[in-house]
Image (cartoon, rainbow, N blue to C red):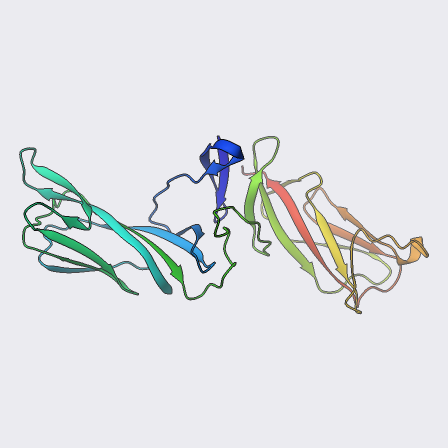
Length: 266
């Protein structure tokens, strides 16, 4: 079994040949990023539940509640119709039966439109479901968690996200922490404000310093000429804070840290 991270949530998938992990099929009322469209934009999926609908009379409209739709890639659904020997039929939409009765689906920026015939009397005790895949106007190519070949990509973010699992089975969280100005010949402790901090993941924390000249160097920074004065030392404290020590004025330099850690609540 393999694990897949979607929108900061860890899902379990099945192992495939050649180390490929197949994406699990998870339907949710919540919007989820499930892949990438051919233009490189993130591909989203949402299942819309339409409750207690008794009849589809030629035209029926339901607001899907999805914001900023760019392209609708697919829309399909399921309904239960009253009738038949067993009392109901299950149909997968769009529907076309052998009596020339049809029910089609069209999705706009705001609504789901059903166009059918009076034939479809829906079982009011069962919900209708429509699953929509789409892209968004607010995204750009490459901004999602997946490549167009279906391979997950790693995007660094200042927002906390789940990226994997630690050796003890707990989720590993990651965030980018930025410091605008480093200390002036002193030791300063910075607080990334990690809630319910557990422990740092070994070898999972890294950083870089950006000097006023624009040059960059990894942290900790070791200056071979004036080691004690010009070097920049860093410690990741057990309380979830970052401590930086400088031997000279580094207030014109900034820093970024990639922090990986677990939580006490997991």
